[in-house]
Amino acid sequence: MILTRRILLLGAPLLLASCATRGGQGNSKLLQNAAFTPDPYYVSLYGGVEDRFPVQAVNLAKVPPKYWRREVAYNTPEQPGTIVVDPNDRFLYLVQENGRAIRYGVGVGKTEAFNFQGEATIARKAEWPRWTPTPDMIRRDPELNEPYRNGMPGGVDNPLGARALYLYRDGRDTLYRLHGTTNPATIGTKVSSGCVRLMNQDIIDLYNRVPTGTKVVVLPSRAPEEAVQPDMV
Image 1 (cartoon, helix red, strand yellow):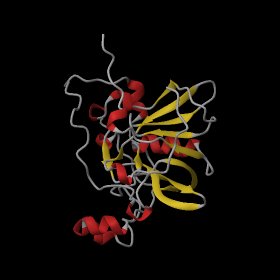
Image 2 (tube, one colour):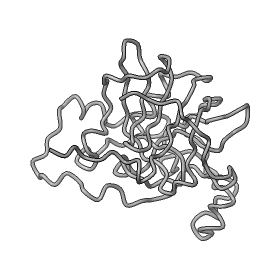
Image 3 (tube, rainbow, N blue to C red):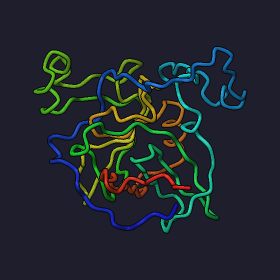
Image 4 (tube, rainbow, N blue to C red):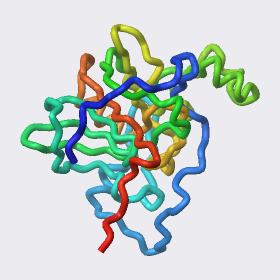
């Protein structure tokens, strides 16, 4: 996959942006095989983590294998150390040397107009971050979000999960984050209110690999007419 540089900032006004939804339906097509037994490597990779708060093991039967963390071939003009988010295929790439990348599965915003697109910089990192709904989130669902107008402390029920990486552009907070999730089954779907969510084990891994100052590129979402058509044989 060769990335293009036609990166535009097409997201909604920042005051409408928000970082998580509390809940979500997750993948509608889960692995149904009762005898499903993932590779022990991935069972260990997504096992429980002892942290400031406990991180639960992921039920891998609820997350399609293509969204499990792995190293892949990746052709891009971006420099090693850059993060590239592909909202169309629901992947986040951490670019490595020699045409390789670490690929993580992600969940992205369900409303295109709220999604950030373009270049940003990780200006802040937080462990077990505090979550504060935006004014727009409070207006849309006051019963759910009004109680947290002043913020929800970090913890196992916080929708930002175990870690957050804060995206800034031109020195200003975009209000978008790369963060964990309390609902791993939503990985690979459009479910958040605009931010990019990863499984907690993956956001911890990414958090440990990237410093502040890291460049992030969020690719444009494809318009329906730009969707890749299947080959006709």
